[in-house]
Length: 330
Ligand SMILES: C[S+](C)CC[C@H](N)C(=O)O
Ligand SMILES: N[C@@H](CCS)C(=O)O
Ligand SMILES: [Zn+2]
Image 1 (cartoon, helix red, strand yellow):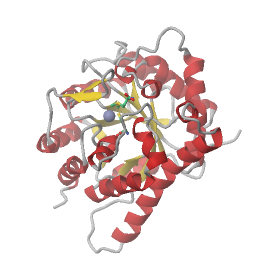
Image 2 (cartoon, helix red, strand yellow; image 1 turned 135 degrees about the vertical axis):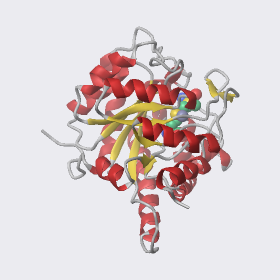
Image 3 (cartoon, helix red, strand yellow; image 1 turned 60 degrees about the horizontal axis):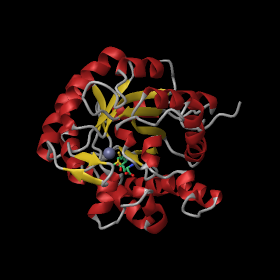
């Protein structure tokens, strides 16, 4: 059987966590930082629009997160999908080439940064890994359903696997170090991801992260117990956790996940603001600044998280604060 990504070992993530002192740093809000630089992404493709319009900006944002201390870069492919690109009039080949580019831009940034920093005596950086973002089906729908898990009765397991399959193949072939399934809102999609990793014989490690809107369950209302029972059966998933949920849910969810899995736990919450899927804007809510992330990051590490970063509305300064406190970088 063809093995996807065979040359990268499943222990690359474990090695990085060890080198980082027991807890590695994931980067922060990617689309957020594109917007800080003036990118206009109010579009069904959201941040993936920059793959077409401004790839240089993508590389710049990756470099900013590396400089801030990220050990893992998450690629620009969250909302980059073949159906999404096709509906913009691109061909399949053009769409696949943009997916390939999302991995190449992150890899080039990582290599450029590492080649320079490794010459600096006493530097406190690790050679970063590139995690290819696989946003949920709800992200592609661009209707906010990555925070509801409500995909409707017509969406079954096979449809979700079909949706994810080709993008996953292209991202692995492009040379990503990891796969990052992000903002998964229900059990069915978690199951689709697990089955797909098996069917495609994917050899690089993956994480599967869920969103949460109540701090207890997946957005669909299904319990994390049910969701993790499925994920625990897969050796290909090396970490599981939460992304793009508010920071004040995280401590409790780490404790819950510790009871439910032996896998590494990844947490990269948003700022606490809430996404309005209809009007496509962030609504003010309990909002946490970088000082709070600094404080929380040690608590999350002490509670057992092995991968910590930020999601929407966090920036390189958030990651700098997290990295500083986790690695005692001055
Ligand atoms: C993580 S959400 C803020 C991404 C954007 C959403 N999928 C949309 O397109 O509306
Ligand atoms: N990796 C994506 C996740 C959005 S929820 C980003 O940071 O933009
Ligand atoms: Zn997010």
